[in-house]
Image 1 (spheres, rainbow, N blue to C red):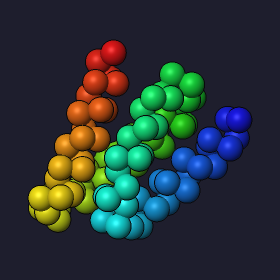
Image 2: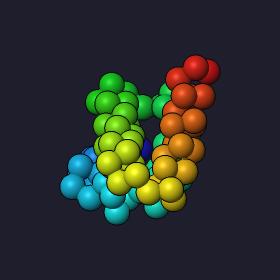
Image 3: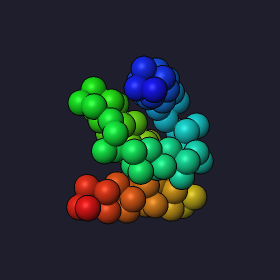
Image 4: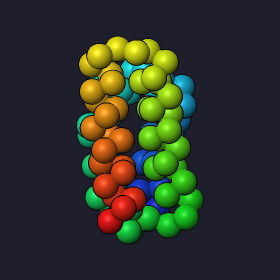
Length: 84
């Protein structure tokens, strides 16, 4: 299971690194990764936070109302996850 999760996370890292703006509409689905933080190992946690940081940077560079609301939801979920 962890190998498959690592492969999927690597694909998300690659997508957000190269096409973060196109991934913004899907950030709501990406935020579901936060439900599984306890199951991830070090490299996988790093990948999750890399995905979220790429999405956040893309949202703030585009300054689109729709994108900001999407990333706001992701940031709130990330904040809640870190503080739980």
